[in-house]
Image (cartoon, helix red, strand yellow):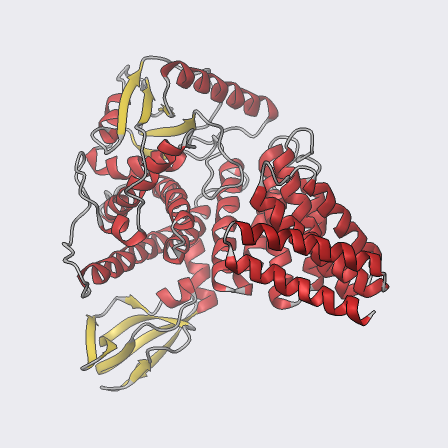
Length: 580
């Protein structure tokens, strides 16, 4: 890791609270106090000693300095630039795992401060709930689980997992998942058709191997249907038998567009003799792998996912030090899937940041050549987390990084072998590039977004995937109308109008009323820009009709904010019509 040494005298300030985070520091000599402003003056948060790394968290999540660092006595530090620090995180798995632990601890401390802050009603601090407990934990209180929703029990089945000695390791897996709120676990004395994989648990990317994986997943769903269960956990223990590779198949097919997909490829690698300390991680990952088949099961996952994630965070901090680099990376990826899903569900930038950094760290332990499928899905998942963060924080660099990461994933997850994940990636890439142009004025990104949407439509056809097709058509229309206005090209605007009208053939008011109204508003915008450019009064009148339909719908359903937007758009059209 490249760095420079810097010396400070007693009382010198290394950095101040609120400053931009541009460097990390390694303390080589002396002590450093971390101070935070308070009502009664500065409060000391910590006193750091030789060998401690600090100032790195702002680099990780791009936030300003959260505290002031002050030298105590003569101090010598290594000063590490943001670029060099991130390279180190990518290239040194031990550093990455340590950073993940710090992110976990910081989020935990944030929770504790929220719990102990003055409130109108008493709040009792609690450690992660014990199996079987119904007491809400910190994350459920912080993230606001919907306690009043009607829930349905989750059913998990664990298949027989034999090692070379004939020992059935499914007992340990079942034990790690038992006695969890709203979940019942049963062992299933069945085996799936074999899937070729190497000693690291990686599936051969050859077409015939992927076909065998598809057959195994289909057989798993058949078993789940017969058992009326939601999730199947299955695994292998290849020679020399030191590691168990666990995979998860949901009864409902996984949505290829959600956060933290597993794809049948990402597995959780644990020591074959793993103990109860891994139970919390296993539980959080299992919840993340379930695609709920009903509102009740979805409510059950929402109810317990916060507690489960919190418990997994604490467990990760205490994992045995003798885990292999690959086992650590596997835990990071699987945990990141859970964190990304909960972060998106609960609108938590902290959890999405944690997930994106866990993906970044883990990706370096998966060779693109040897572990290409896992590497590709990790890049896909990291891109999704970065895109969500970029949209929530209006950070153009995050959106740009998301697009670059999607392109890496597309280099592995091709259209032939992974048609649906490929199409979802193309649509996501298109959205990231479209929003990048909206925030940074990058016209080339806008052109590339249209190409990505058109690529997605090669798989998302109207006949096979009508709702996805309509989504992409609407996205294409949004990007096309922006580009058409920028280029002052009526032909591009006409394509935007056509795309909206096509989408409305699927997004009907009867079947998808909210999407119908949004597309009507989009159609109105495209027609307005076209009519303004061509001077055609008839086109402007059609724009007015589209905005009126959207406005009236929002008015009927009490969506005041959306109604105001449609009304404002309508007023622009009316002024132009009056002037023509």
